[in-house]
Image (cartoon, rainbow, N blue to C red; front, top):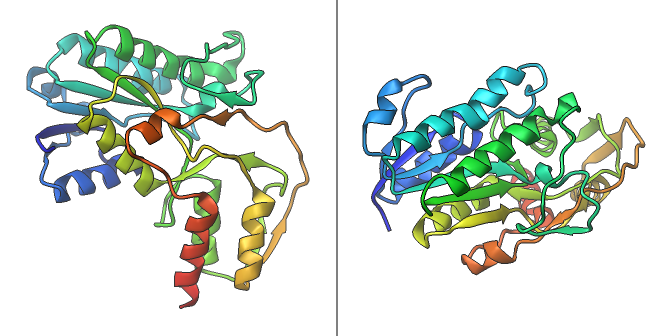
Length: 269
């Protein structure tokens, strides 16, 4: 399938890679600049809504609400799209008293917690996408996305980028912390699959397993790197995201340990 695709947030981490992949596959890609109001007056085809804030959401709460909810609300009101795929996050499951979280799990938030601005604004964006698009909306809840190109965000991305510079790594984290990781290329493949089916409802775009820092460090040690951690915290693990719906779309992410192993092999080749 090819056609017209509009990427909101095309200069961001996911949006850049998605734009390159769609263009290579023959899609007609429209990437509006930030604050381009002409967006709402044109046909948009399949919209990939990649705009959002992550690390600095607490410092910029009002921009967070604008990016996660206000802008997508305007887009949905305009209604000039065939399908809308809204990028959200599996961090919405954090704090839920379950071991495994599938897409039907009711979400619970404390509105008095200032750190929940991110979660609540994403949840509102999800709600608008799912309930106000006349069946044309779907939500991709992304886990911890990583890559090794310079400026890729996130702890594991920074770890991999640093590994290309030095074999002696000192990480500001704990070996006991576990996360669900998925490589950026698998995320892009999942988003395109959601457009091609097309998908409806919510889809967990995740690796489907929790991997501790210590497990990843062992791969580095086996490949000849030294790895040290500055902390020793052992917080409760987050829920593991069920990825049955993702697999039903024909997408099976490569396990994070395999991706890291292959990356290190390229560095040492």
